[in-house]
Image 1 (cartoon, rainbow, N blue to C red):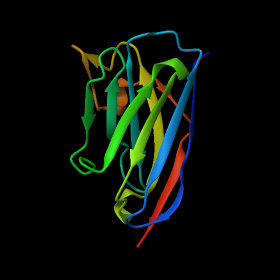
Image 2 (cartoon, rainbow, N blue to C red):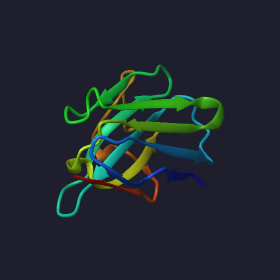
Image 3 (tube, rainbow, N blue to C red):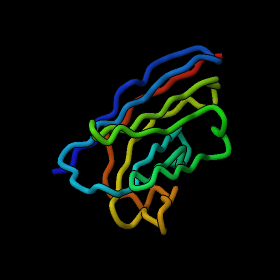
Length: 129
């Protein structure tokens, strides 16, 4: 059974940093897509960053480019999201997601939530001004 467990959320002031971790278990695919999505109250879930574990190709939403970095540690089956220069508008529940097939697009990953089949329970990030 695939499990994705997020950690690292919390409350910070604007300009601060947080690092989210997503540990995957029961997941045997060597090349797949993993990503971070977020959902604020009353808004749709949006793709923040994705990474193709087979080659490392990444995607970032325009709103986080230059501030967030997604990375992987294959030995630990863990994906990270380093978030710097946080803004109040980054406040949301952050979800880790994975998919070995539907989300994979010729060596890169989809940023559409509907393409990801496995999800974590989410971790809250709150940024105060």
